[in-house]
Image (cartoon, rainbow, N blue to C red; front, side):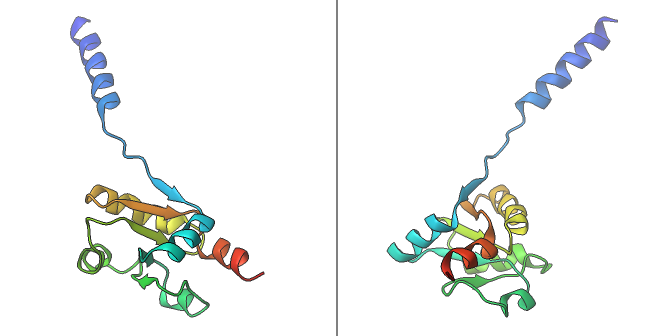
Length: 123
C-alpha cells in the first residue's frame, strides 16, 4: 500500500512541476499602434486563398499548413525580436504561437485575427 501512495504522490509532483508557457496576445487595436510606430515582424499564417481576400500591408506570408512552416519562419524572422502572428480568426495563429514558443521565439497572437482587423479598419 505504501508504494502505491508514494507512486501517486510522485506523479502529482511531476504533473504540477511541468512548465506551462503563457501565450502572449495583442489586440488588433494594439497591433495598429505598433505598426504605426515601428517596423515589426508580422506574419500572416493564412492560406494563399485567404490572403487574396485581403491582408495587412506589411505582413510576411507563411502558411501554417505548409509542412515546412517552422523552417520558413526560422529562415525569415529574427529570433531576437518579437514576432506577431495572425490568421483569419486567431485559432491557427494561436497554434502557431505555441509552436514558436516551444522553439524559443517571443511570440504574440493577434486576437480576432484578420476578420477583426478588417472590421475595425474598413468602417
